[in-house]
Figure 1: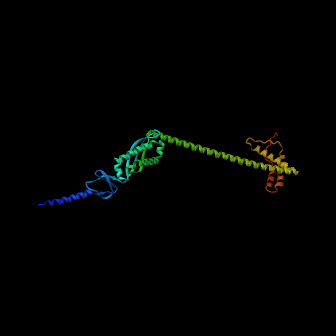
Figure 2 (figure 1 turned 90 degrees about the vertical axis):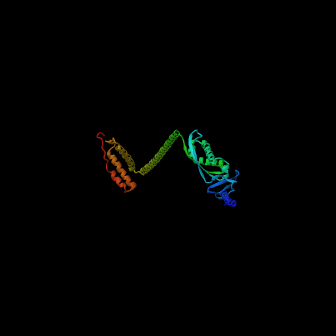
Figure 3 (figure 1 turned 120 degrees about the vertical axis):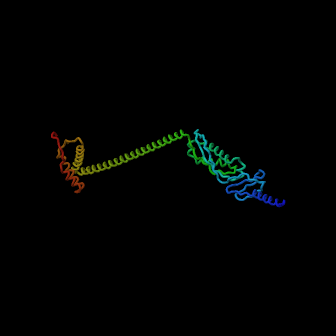
Length: 316
């Protein structure tokens, strides 16, 4: 038969094992557990092996200390210019203080979600549609700053708040497309007008340069004519009568050349005798020899001895 002592010893061993099992807690990596004594927070258990007082202390909240993601559902936002857009997003947060996250707010994720959605409506509702679509980075930065400041007493850190999609109504998207096409057409017309203006300016500059060149050529021709007249005048002053013949013959031949170059000139009326022209050309050759020497003017003299082929009217 077993005595009372033999029964007490196994019971004590089992009781000690139960106490040890209840007092030793293993906390996984990335988590913090809060400890409550008679319902009041006393301390926080960190990852690893921890010991509490059995039956007096108990585990309160099990807080995830890793960065977590929270989906923000789609909601409608009215912008400053009364456009209605559908917006959704995503939030990232991390618990830094487990007791505050456990005891400062009830339902941490629900609180963060509602705080983020409310501030999305506030921030985006204060902006025009064009500003809303083109300044997404500024919106994200402003949302992060506001939500993080509001959630700081809860012992959490908002790491990111991102707007995923901004969807205007279909009729508004169509209006924006028409506006974009009109703006592109406007820019194309402006570029075409600028190109036409540049072409006209270049053309005007070309005409200006051509007129300047023509004036310069006429000026040089006038200088050459004046020089030739001066040479003839000096020859006349020295008593050389053939200089007069040279000057008159030159004008005479120029007039004949103009008459012959006309398209409707078939018969040339000679108001003077052909022998007078031959004599004038002879004078030209003699003066050329005296002025320029026996160089290239010799050929001019020889050519001047040939009578021009001229038809005279029988009635002249």
